[in-house]
Length: 174
Image (cartoon, rainbow, N blue to C red):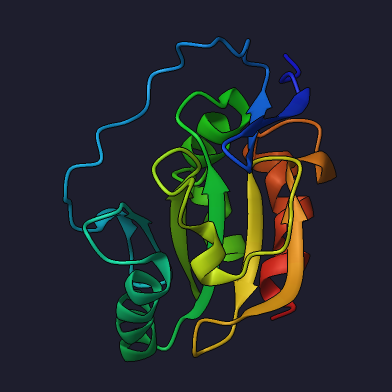
């Protein structure tokens, strides 16, 4: 089954919202902005994925704190913007638990950023404009976006077989 890759941008208070396969309504619920700490999604000896949620600080401060954890383990930092309503994003992260993805993610510390949770704070990280999710950004050791990016338009399906072919060159080129 092929995932719906349709994405539309809608202006919202001077920002754009990116919607993949989602019907935008005027009463779209916003996630709770309660203070929370980073959530460790996957932690292996070879790679790590954690979700950064707003907890009172700005995104650049949260990323700097995460980078301290990255440097302690000698991993390469990347950020990924996704959303809980984005089916390709959910499928992709589910694929990351497949053993076939281990070599692709080797040496990576991935910071997962939810589109809605950080909507008004992406400027802090100076992310380049993007029009599709999921989207990955390579980060330097000090948290600066390097300019290397790849998004969900680079693959047709979020299966381990496809993601290994597309994401291995991106992550391992760093």
